[in-house]
Amino acid sequence: MRLSVFHLIFAGILTVIFVVFIFTKWQNKNAQIKVLNNEILVAQTKLHNVEELGTKVLAYVRISRGLDILGHKRLSDSQKNILAGKLLAISNDYKIDPILILAVIRHESRGNPNARGAYTSGIHSGALGLMQIKYESAREVASSVGVKINSPEDLFIPEKNLMVGTAYLLRLIAKYKNLQHALIAYNVGIGTLDEKLRKGRALPTRYYNKIMQDYRYLTEEIFMKR
Image (cartoon, rainbow, N blue to C red; front, side, top):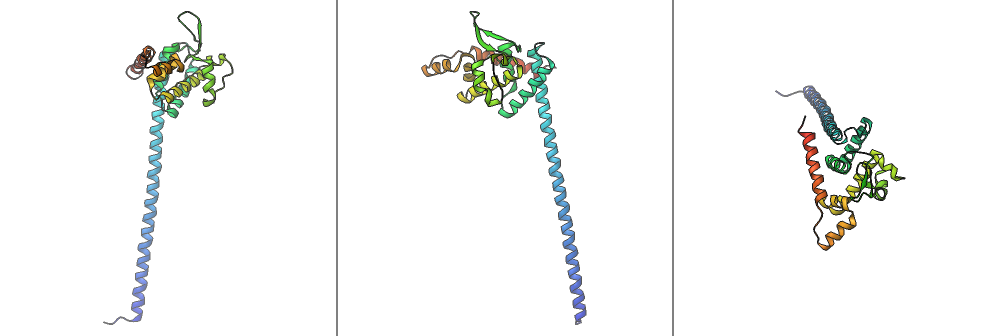
């Protein structure tokens, strides 16, 4: 049977309508898929943010517990909250274990923000505050962490002492690329350590060993005991 022109036109119109219908359905389905993909991405981002927040909260709690352990009643709740926030920020920004910093504080001052260092002879060493940092060393690194140190008395402000003391230790770690050497230099000074390294002499490791002992103690107290 031969189709008339009318039938051919009608069939062509139906074909066009069908193609347009299918194309529209495909576009709608594609749009729905895009919306769904966007919703999945948003949900994943929110989940990541929640996980990240949970990690930070847990780290903050652990740092706070560490400050409670070493600070006893020497630090007020307000001071501990400020220090915990600073330590959390430092550990995130510079990828340093906050418990290591707490171990240095424990060994250096037992968490006493007003501590003054002294040599075995009884003469003041010039080391001040939580991390027992000297005024000259503090002044060297203060600007790098946005802290103003105008006098030795500023080092008795816990958060300032923490910031400059940690900055100084981080500078030593960057210099030596070796935690043991950095901690030894923190204790005996860069000049003394460099001389011993240059002459191949035995290094004084007692301070480093003490810090690691305090680190293990704090880690056990913070993570294992309830």
